[in-house]
Image 1 (cartoon, rainbow, N blue to C red):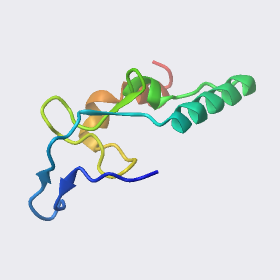
Image 2 (cartoon, rainbow, N blue to C red; image 1 turned 45 degrees about the horizontal axis):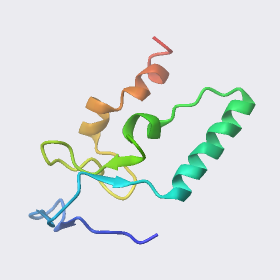
Image 3 (cartoon, rainbow, N blue to C red; image 1 turned 90 degrees about the vertical axis):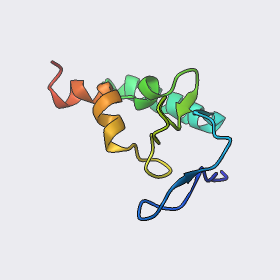
Image 4 (cartoon, rainbow, N blue to C red; image 1 turned 180 degrees about the vertical axis):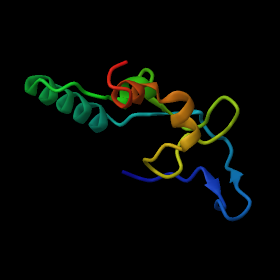
Amino acid sequence: MTQKNYIIGSRFSKVKILSPINHTINLYENEIALNKELLNIAKQAGVEVINPIAFICKNNMYPVLTDDNNFVYKDTNHLRPFYIRHEAKYIDRAVMNGK
């Protein structure tokens, strides 16, 4: 998998968004296949799954930027805290004991 850089700079200096930048990126076919396989294994084991892909990714596209141009990820696979607080509702059920 080739990593693509979307910004220049760091959190310690000025950050510049490279243009053009898409607000979403396609999931790779192997990611989709792995997710399906893991969901099937969990189902067979009787496990309740917290599947962030089902909540975060729409039509096999995952977000890179919010509508107001904030980055969703802080690195290649970790969501930023603000995004989790506002968008990751899939975690609520597990943290709040199913309430």
